[in-house]
Amino acid sequence: MTLINKTCLAYLSPVLRRIEQSRRDPARFQLECFRSLVKNGRETSFGREHRFDAIKGITDFQRRVPVRDYDAFQPYIDRLRGGEDRVTWNQRVRWFAKSSGTSSDKSKFIPVTPDNLRACHMGGFTRMIGSFLHRHPGSRILSGKALTLGGSVQVDGGGDGRAFTGDLSAILLANSPRVAEWVRTPPREVALVVNFQEKIEKICRLCSRLDVTNFSGVPSWNLVLINKLLEYNNARYLTDVWPNIELFMHGGINFEPYRAQYRELIPAPRMKYVENYNASEGYFAFQDEDDDPSMLLTLDNGVFYEFIPVERLDEASREGARELDTVESVVTGKPYALVISTNGGLWRYLVGDCVEFTSTYPHKIKIVGRTRLYINVFGEELMIGNAENALAVACRECDASVREYTVAPLYMTLDHKGSHQWLVEFSEPPADVELFTDRLDRALCSVNSDYEAKRANNSTMSRPVVRPVPPGTFLRWLETRERVGGQNKVPRLSNDRHVVEELLTLID
Image (cartoon, rainbow, N blue to C red):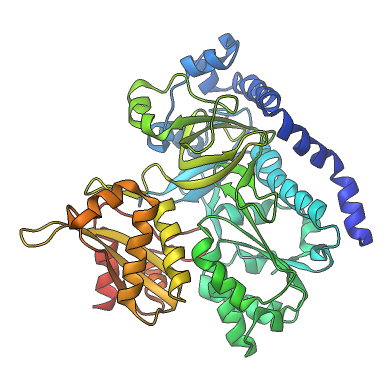
């Protein structure tokens, strides 16, 4: 073990100790978190409105505060963006994480308080790094540079000019301690460049000869950067550019459709991939075992979690979701919609993600979809997790790899049954698209019984239609919408043809 690793692990020993304690006693940590949140919330407009001073426990809290999605919570956020202080948290809010999400074209502005930055977002990253070094004490990630492909920050036009908005990654970069500049690359002024193409060109010039040992970000955008680095350096593998690379910390989208491409481009025996669940609303979980793809729920980070069984989501929305599951009552194998209260001033906020517990004690999750990101035009109820698992199977069986994709319905007509149309940008196309389509269809049937029932004997739905699109199609579409880089994502599943039709106009 290197001296720097010993020093870092010694410094992080209290953090690692609390992680281990929370694995054994999650309810205690969540109760402590809940009490701290309510105490801070009493000093806010939201807390007075909902009588936080009378809250004696979790049941009181659930009865007084209804569950809200972004649209319902937005009036409070508008007040914050307008310059009002102590609306939902007892701190001044100067930063808002801007996110369009993957299920709506509308921009969301998530408040990021100083407490939320320190204890939740940066604290989550610290826990992840500490856990990784504990598992790999011989790692040399701290001996080289960490590359972060972030977004951009701009003055918020929603208020008096005092606030800033940007991708979460850019907000973290802008607020990280100066000492971090010693180990991070590219320099902050390059990392925050607005134009994505300009940014990656500068990264290629500045970082190609550096000893980069780890990098982080959204898999799809980092794949663009890797290919540009290889082109710039006339190299075949990323290890030709950065021979000591050994860790990619990823999140934002499912990594499975990209895993084969990364392994091909980074043939390093020491290479590790760690998933983290760091949304604009908070840092919720991270992968704490190399051989287990599920993520450990972070329980002492200023986030109190509640869970709505997906089958009760409509009912809960109508009735205000008064009493919900907590970490004490969740079970494995059931999809839940995630509800959070945070030190960012979000209270019983419906994130929009669906998670499933793979274990309890420790509480570990995987992301299985979005509350709105699914296709249910023909009663098939196809979730994003189903689609991405099936796509990974089809790619594996047909020696293909996918860069980007989106799926939309092909509606029923008098002459044709309904089906799904997949627009797919392959980085490695299959030799036979028809065979790929058959394998995809078969895999979808195996992971979703509703889809299988609709496909049985072509009863309601016919075989999906896979249409390969030229390289760069999705990037061009994002450019037309000024959504390039950062944490912007291509909508994967839609219940209408709006996105697909826009894409088709670029290639037809």
